[in-house]
Length: 257
Image 1 (spheres, rainbow, N blue to C red):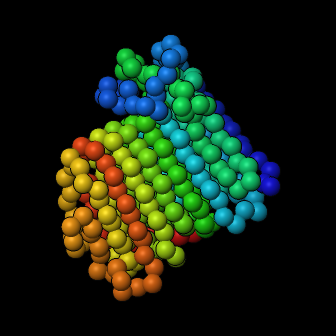
Image 2 (image 1 turned 90 degrees about the horizontal axis):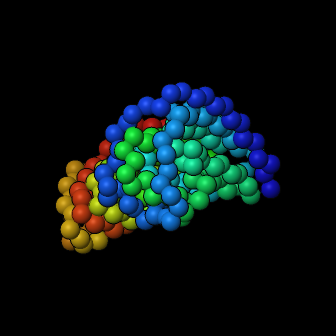
């Protein structure tokens, strides 16, 4: 069992007005609740870090009700995180036990609805270790996500998101086969796929549009030139509602730590 090593730094500032999410985002299931509406308060900035310990494989779980999420590599330990929020009950909770890292709202299933709050801010900037194999799951009620995952040693990814715009960089040099499952609401998805690793993307039918670059289509399946020609395969399954899916093959731009 790992001993939690979590360091925290905090700052506070005056409330800052920010553009709110659309009502569809605010009413997302992960934000539904029976508690009174939350109130905007002082803008809080908090930094936390988590030491890796002796873990050889890590499970990472990220749960955000709504907001702006950025995930990248480059942490010296397991996690370096910056949080900005102006609703006190949106303060995130970090736990690291038995090689499982959890970054989430205090109760993602019961965060009171933000409907009617147009000036709230909730921004997470998470930097993870690039050298340790990890299985990741991300759950968001809605908002925007920028997941630059090429520098991480992912063994699998489960992404469940609501309405919003999401960029997912899956390029880079994958060391082993991996499965990626994406379940989205009314969302725009942009996926960057590797050129030198086999990539197969299956998109379930639905009221969305798909554009591609560097892929061959066969019905609902899209493959890159390396698929079936190399040993390692990235298998992606996408299920989404109204929106647009942009699939692009790119050369490796990041090297894992």
